[in-house]
Image 1 (spheres, rainbow, N blue to C red):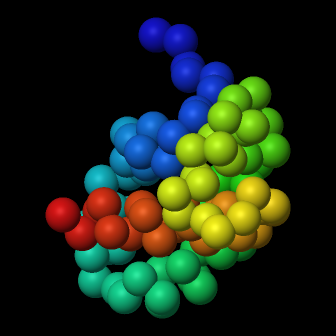
Image 2 (cartoon, rainbow, N blue to C red):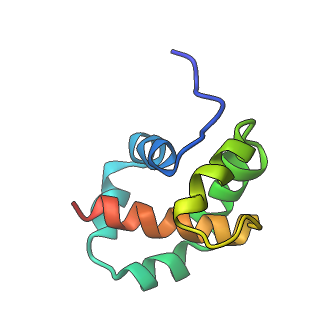
Amino acid sequence: MTEKTGFSTVSGIIDDILRTLPLAFREKIKETTCEGFCLKQHFDLGMMIWNKYFYQNPLRDKLIQNLGAEKDFMLIDGDEFSGIILENYMRESQK
Protein backbone atom coordinates (compact mmCIF):
# COMPACT_ATOMS: atom_id res chain seq x y z
CA MET A 1 0.00 0.00 0.00
CA THR A 2 1.42 3.38 -0.96
CA GLU A 3 1.39 6.32 1.39
CA LYS A 4 -0.74 9.26 0.34
CA THR A 5 1.50 12.18 -0.60
CA GLY A 6 -0.85 15.15 -0.72
CA PHE A 7 -3.76 16.45 1.30
CA SER A 8 -6.15 19.12 0.04
CA THR A 9 -8.74 19.08 2.85
CA VAL A 10 -8.74 19.21 6.63
CA SER A 11 -10.95 16.10 6.72
CA GLY A 12 -8.37 14.18 4.65
CA ILE A 13 -5.66 15.16 7.12
CA ILE A 14 -7.81 14.22 10.11
CA ASP A 15 -8.58 10.83 8.54
CA ASP A 16 -4.86 10.23 7.98
CA ILE A 17 -4.01 11.18 11.57
CA LEU A 18 -6.78 8.94 12.93
CA ARG A 19 -5.38 6.03 10.89
CA THR A 20 -1.80 6.53 12.04
CA LEU A 21 -1.99 7.41 15.74
CA PRO A 22 -2.03 4.52 18.23
CA LEU A 23 -5.37 3.66 19.81
CA ALA A 24 -3.99 4.28 23.32
CA PHE A 25 -3.07 7.85 22.33
CA ARG A 26 -6.51 8.46 20.83
CA GLU A 27 -8.19 7.15 23.99
CA LYS A 28 -6.03 9.35 26.23
CA ILE A 29 -7.09 12.42 24.22
CA LYS A 30 -10.69 11.87 25.32
CA GLU A 31 -9.59 12.60 28.90
CA THR A 32 -8.48 16.18 28.19
CA THR A 33 -9.95 19.49 27.04
CA CYS A 34 -9.43 20.85 23.55
CA GLU A 35 -7.34 23.74 24.86
CA GLY A 36 -5.22 21.45 27.05
CA PHE A 37 -4.68 19.04 24.17
CA CYS A 38 -3.64 21.80 21.76
CA LEU A 39 -1.21 23.32 24.26
CA LYS A 40 0.32 19.97 25.18
CA GLN A 41 0.65 18.73 21.60
CA HIS A 42 1.85 21.99 20.05
CA PHE A 43 5.49 20.87 19.85
CA ASP A 44 4.89 17.14 19.39
CA LEU A 45 1.97 16.28 17.14
CA GLY A 46 1.82 19.92 16.07
CA MET A 47 5.34 19.82 14.62
CA MET A 48 4.54 16.64 12.69
CA ILE A 49 1.46 18.41 11.31
CA TRP A 50 3.58 21.41 10.24
CA ASN A 51 6.00 19.21 8.37
CA LYS A 52 3.87 16.46 6.85
CA TYR A 53 0.60 18.22 6.14
CA PHE A 54 1.72 21.80 5.51
CA TYR A 55 5.35 22.39 4.51
CA GLN A 56 5.88 19.06 2.68
CA ASN A 57 2.36 18.88 1.27
CA PRO A 58 2.39 19.11 -2.54
CA LEU A 59 -1.28 20.17 -2.41
CA ARG A 60 -0.69 22.98 0.12
CA ASP A 61 -2.07 25.75 -2.12
CA LYS A 62 -5.30 23.79 -2.67
CA LEU A 63 -5.49 23.06 1.06
CA ILE A 64 -5.14 26.76 1.92
CA GLN A 65 -7.90 27.58 -0.58
CA ASN A 66 -10.12 24.97 1.08
CA LEU A 67 -9.46 26.57 4.48
CA GLY A 68 -11.15 29.73 3.21
CA ALA A 69 -14.38 28.69 4.93
CA GLU A 70 -12.52 28.59 8.27
CA LYS A 71 -10.27 31.59 7.70
CA ASP A 72 -11.07 35.25 7.07
CA PHE A 73 -7.84 35.69 5.11
CA MET A 74 -5.56 33.59 2.94
CA LEU A 75 -2.29 34.22 4.82
CA ILE A 76 -1.49 31.23 6.98
CA ASP A 77 1.66 29.79 8.48
CA GLY A 78 2.52 26.35 9.83
CA ASP A 79 1.85 27.34 13.44
CA GLU A 80 -1.63 28.64 12.73
CA PHE A 81 -2.32 25.68 10.45
CA SER A 82 -1.30 23.11 13.08
CA GLY A 83 -3.65 24.81 15.56
CA ILE A 84 -6.55 24.45 13.11
CA ILE A 85 -5.74 20.76 12.58
CA LEU A 86 -5.27 20.04 16.31
CA GLU A 87 -8.64 21.63 17.11
CA ASN A 88 -10.38 19.72 14.33
CA TYR A 89 -8.66 16.50 15.35
CA MET A 90 -9.79 16.96 18.94
CA ARG A 91 -13.40 17.52 17.88
CA GLU A 92 -13.33 14.46 15.61
CA SER A 93 -11.70 12.21 18.19
CA GLN A 94 -14.41 13.10 20.74
CA LYS A 95 -17.12 11.56 18.53
